Image 1 (cartoon, protein in one colour):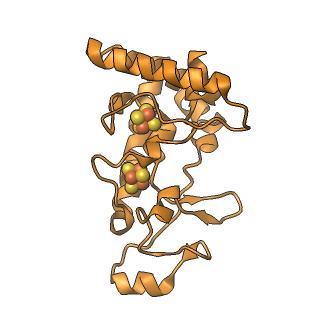
Image 2: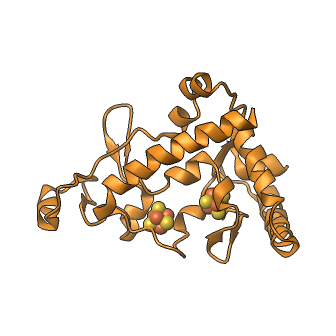
Length: 193
Ligand code: SF4
Ligand code: SF4
């Protein structure tokens, strides 16, 4: 099963690489920017979680201990949390970098692209509103592409939304195509409870 998941990841990486390359004028991801690894839920299916753990086991002892302590601290906070949606910084984020980069989940691989929703509406990544990806081409008030800003950039690469919703990328179509089962999906931290 893990071999099939690896084949799926290879396919997904290639596909996302093409998407990101086509959106170069609008992508401002750089090393050290870790906003997308903070204050969120990070859905993980069972197979993604198993792969992530396998990656964590390849890390040196000190990093593994740091991750364990992050997990413990988040779970403690979660116990006391009374709100609806518990948000946290990813425990695998160490010194503003992903400690398990090659093993990260599907949602982490799609961070930063503009998505095309089921109603054919584009949705900018949250960081567009923080002056990052797509901020140079969006009308932030109307949440639409600004033709004026696009023209000003003088580029032929159109800003596009892609069907990279987590539900779709971990759905039945991919299970069948790669002969795998993603299994249950829940926020990353819940897998440690
Ligand atoms: S697994 Fe890595 S990329 Fe994903 S949220 Fe955590 S630190 Fe970020
Ligand atoms: S997706 Fe946005 S928040 Fe994440 S690394 Fe790229 S620019 Fe930074």
